[in-house]
Length: 345
Image (tube, rainbow, N blue to C red):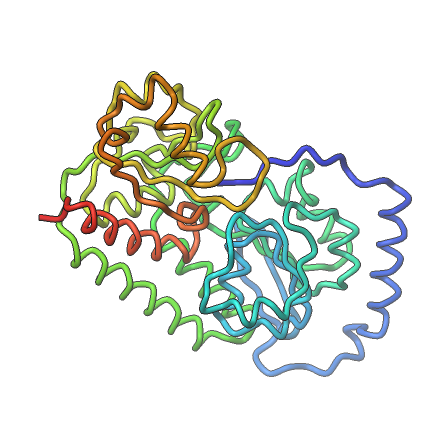
């Protein structure tokens, strides 16, 4: 789920100084004097825009956790100048490399703070990050000659201008994550490693789906906010988990990615299992799984639900419920949780 910030846009004076810094530092890298690199330039079409890099990027800034974990999985930690916008701890397997990368901000970084890192590629997982209310529109980076990359999972088969987190016009599939990893591999010269990462994710999902048999079990995915909860619709990242494990999402009748739904409606649909997002960020009520469960068990509406009475909870990292390589880990996690709850036949 996307991070919605209310941070004001940066001041004109600060922006001007940052642009001057970027231009001054980039003068030594005049393309006319930079030696050609075999296989470059590389160009590809990404979310309707052409992205071109003239050489393997060496100072990548990732603006969302999803693209950060994709880049680190490609072994690019030593070529990353900064990261931002986190909902969860990093994957343990990537922790050592991630610790070496500067964290610019836990939330959306300002435009000037990104420029200060002199990036030669800026990546993001969500359209909102590259919006006027986020870090900055892609066009502002383009004006300064900085290539940008947006994950196809947030632009293909999705309308992002419908409010909230957007609406899926077609179901998200892991093929969009595989495309992201493959394209990042092409831009960074790590195509072979990208193929290995994709193969590994496919095997994780295959093995998880084969490990449990809970077909038809009804489920609800709660990401955040106890006052007006964000519940998964049919067709975002939780939809992959639902389909791979043969489950039934009780809100599969909405194509909104994360609609806000009343607790009365949630209780009326009475799912057998609750998949609860465990977020480490602190921008809304009901972020951690602990506070979510405390709410469910004390609220007079939700405490009467069968899943709450029987404590049928599966705890998921927020990143597992976002469209990214972590979705594969979400399939594993939910499969394991269903087995532990005795729902696998």
